[in-house]
Each structure stands twice: as structure tokens, then as C-alpha cells.
Length: 486
Ligand code: GLN
Image (tube, rainbow, N blue to C red; front, side, top):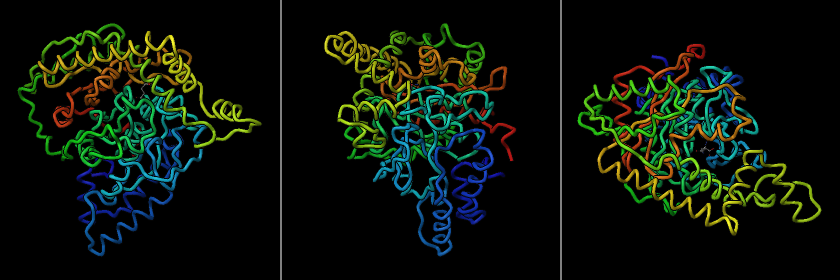
């Protein structure tokens, strides 16, 4: 079996039995990056120490030393996860070349488990966007068709997995940024419950919504990665004090009797016919597998987009205040303090980031605060209640991940509202705070992948991962684009 098709357990077993070394495994991915990344443009930075780190692990293994579970397995990281000894840029000119002095919690948990970091992956600047076109350095393209976008903001993380430029990656999801690119690139992407994964060392966009999660070729790999990074952390005050567990144990493939809600609001206007057909077929497949499909309603769905774009921009305008030209990254030429702030921010931020800061500052300003920010907080509560009510009747919810498949680069850059609509099916879940994932469920008439979304209640990651796993066992939609295969 080619390395490309191995799951995380097979990689760990292959290393343990010395079928291949970590240096060989790491070199395999570095060679693919060398060969394909000019076209895919997923990596902002490739870790030049990866091979030496792999060799060091091989040496320990050959001496028979005790090694952590995943010692010597490569992984790659969205470029807003804080790492040491290499840049963390958030794909922003503001942080070009910026090397943080510490490591974030999720990344250090990966390190403790023995993973080797292949490098940092491109994204929309500060995670604001749905196509990776807001990236300042590399606009990642979809490996299935490089004229098209990979989705965003974790576009590099999704494309790297789809193209086999990393076995799995981490991304972040504030309104859909893991699930939407996973859907557009034909991989599995999961947003854990808010609080499941520590946000310490995740560069903040909208702190009440941000969450780190895995992107991978299978539910199994996603479950394994979540088991590593899903740990309570005193360094994040919103980290949930929930026991760390091995989610792969939940993947029994047995889903009989699980109640899955089908929300009518998610199958309305704007859903492309190809996506609708594929998602309808996925619903039927779950019925075949013995699940109980139940029609439900999430009545405040129509307000989710507006609510999200008020709250997320408000939080962003506050979080991004720290980029002042003094503390982090870019420092512009200036004669006085005001110009230093002004020039640094003018030069450092791209158009979308500026738009968000202005929107956010507006909704928080005196006179508009009650009309927008407070109102949006109230609507957020109504949206949350929709989910609370739904989960009294069902165990999980099924719906499309994205209204369309991947679109041509440039198709939506002039129309921010069209771009914002890419996340219309994903952002309610962030407002609620539960868990959700996208799993491949078909292809459109151009052969582009389609994902179906499974949403779960708070801390029900095991249940939705098992649902995705059962679906994968019964279908065959996850594969690497033909032309990218060695
Ligand atoms: N596309 C959404 C936005 O631009 C979601 C981003 C995200 O989840 N980080 O805000």
C-alpha cells in the first residue's frame, strides 16, 4: 500500500515495525511538496529541520528507546498556530517573518506525541475569508482544479491533505474555516466543540467563536488527532474541563437507531442542485445504515449570517488592536506616534482585514452598540436555543457544508456578500458552540468534491465522528486527485 493511503495507525505501525523510517516518511512528503506545491501553493513555509528531527527519532527508535505514540509522523499547521523557530504570519504582511517566542498548546501537544511539523500552511489573512484569496503571500489553489479556489480560510490546510502534501493538518474554524475548505477539497474537516481544544497559541480572530481542529483523509485520522489536542488547558480560560479521551474508540461503525435531524432551512434557495443531490443521497445512505431521519427546524437560521458578521467583526476589531507597529511584526516609517500606528496598519493589513476592522469598530461605537452589537448578542442566544431545542429531539444534524462546490479564482473577490454566503451553512454552529464536521459525499458535474456536514451537541465529537466513519465505510468519495498521484 502506498504511504499516501495509509491512515495514522498504519503510519505508526509502519514506523514501529521499521517498514519505513521517519526520515523516509518525512522525505516522501517533502519530495511531494517540492514537486506539487508550486501549483497548489499550500505552504507559506517548509520546515527545513523536519528531516533532522525525523532522523533524531529514527536514532532513538533504533536504540530501542521508549517513544510517544505518533513519534516520527509528519503533520502540517495553519499559519496562525504559534510555533517556535519559524515564522507565524497569518498570511499577513503585518506579520511577515515574525517568529513568536513560544509554542501554542495544540502544537506542543502534537510535539509531545512525537509529530514532526512539515511547515506552515497558507490561509486567508487573519482567517478572514472563504477562498484563500485574501492571503498576502500565497493564494492556495484547489488540487482538483487549480483554476479554482480551495475554500478558506484554512485553504492551505485542506489543499495540503487533498494533494497529499501532508497526511493531515490542523486548521481553525471561526465561522466555517475548517469545514468549508474540507468540503471544497474533498477531505474530512472537523470543528470541535468550543472549549474542547485550547486556544492558547492560536492567533485570535473572534475569540468567542475560534476553535482549532483537524483536517484529514478520514474520520479515523481526525479522531486520532483530536484525541491528542483535545485536552483541558489552564492557559485558556475558556478551555473546557472535560477529560481527554481516545475518540478512535468511538468509531464502531455501528449507527443503528441514531436520530439525525434534517433542518428544512438548510435545503432552501441558493443551494446548488449538484450539492443538493449529493446531500440528499447522503441522507438516504444514513437511512440505509439504520439511522432515524427526522425533519426538524432551526427557525432563526436566516439571521445567522448577519449575526455572525456583527459579532465576528466586533471581536476582530478589538483583537487586531494589538497590531500597532510596536509590539508585533511590521513597523512603518513615521515621524510621530499617530503616524506610526496609521502607517503600520495601512501597509500591513489587506483590504478584507481593513473592512472587518471598520465594520467591527462601527458596530461597537457609541450610538450603534445597542442597535447592532447588543442586538446580535440577543439573536445569538435565539440561534443557540434553536440548537438546544433540536438536540432534545435528535442526536445529530445533517445538512450541506457549503452551498456550492469550489468556484473559479476571482469569481467572488469583487462581491464580499457573495463570498460571505459561502459560510451560510457553517456559521450557525459556531454561534451555538457545538461540534461539526464535513465528510466527502460526492462530486459535481465537473468532478469537484462535495461535502456533507454533520453537526453535534456540545462534546459529542465521538458520535459525529462515528457517523462519518460509518459513511466512509459505506461509500468511496475520499481520494487524491488522479493527476497528483505519483
Ligand atoms: N469565512 C468566514 C469569515 O470570513 C469564516 C472564517 C473562519 O472560520 N475563520 O469570517
